[in-house]
Image (cartoon, rainbow, N blue to C red):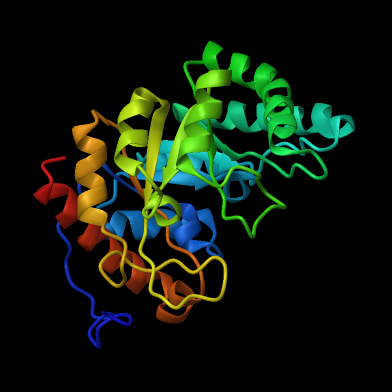
Length: 281
């Protein structure tokens, strides 16, 4: 099993343009400013990006992204504190502000996690989530934007209570939401193929990275091809189910930091582009 980047990982080459359905997530360059992100997208021939809202707080950031000609796959941000209804008004206001940014950038997806559930049991939390997000989902639909939820790992209960793709799809269907499929978290999930087929168009975004076990930190993503996630099979699975959206390369954690953003992203873009091309995406 591969244990990290090859010795030539840092070598600079002249890349061919990234696959048109590839979007590079700005969390893959977590500590960089948006200006350096945009430079890297140009260097790697990347025409799409998914943007975390913290990269867009500068008043000029939206204009910089527009001027760069980048197609924005989604704008994402933290979710609502569903365990505390007293905070919903403020959390909704924040999400609506992010929606405005997404609309300004032409993004058709607003991504978020499901938020902490506190002492609520799962079903109580599900009902609270639907109530908390309903005004935001309605406002997003008015702009032809899908509000989509993303599963989280069970150890990250401070940001979400939904830990499987199957449960994400169930809640999305119940409340008229979209789903962000995080392949790094669901690739070993029971009956994954059936879940993907049943989800249909509810899956609005697919996120891609790899995993090198043993892993004892969170997050601990790896460059596609370095680990054990069967990405080629997953890509074919969602394509066969009718998925027509982008594939977001989202890599973060100590492996990416140690290798360096530019090298990791260069290898990741090349590897995912090859997977998408081979799959006929």
